[in-house]
Amino acid sequence: MIGRLNHVAIAVRDLASATALYRDTMGAKVSAPIAQPAHGVTVVFIELPNTKIELLEPLGEGSPIAKFLERNADGGMHHICYEVDDIIAARDRLKAGGARVLGDGEPKIGAHGKPVLFLHPKDFNGTLIELEQV
Ligand code: CO
Image (cartoon, rainbow, N blue to C red):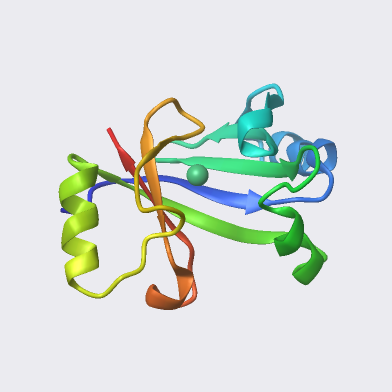
């Protein structure tokens, strides 16, 4: 069921300095900042040979990462995203196994224009999991 690692998302307070760190110090290829008001974040995509890193900065009121940054003043890993072929089948299998799906349990269109779901971190070793249908 579980497929490739699609991305690791890191919440940051200062997107410009985090981007500069990856671009200048790490030598990574980074995108321009992309505002995603529907998701309450501004994102920079970092392309690595085998996966992506997404830097997330809060955007607007009620950003879903604002509380995370209150608890993690230096920023930190926010979630990891695994690819699945069939997100409904994956959801039903996980729910049958006792995992909790966040929100109303229905897939939403995520930051890449594809259906996504989030799984409760308490059911996954303290890590927020995103599933993306590819
Ligand atoms: Co994500």
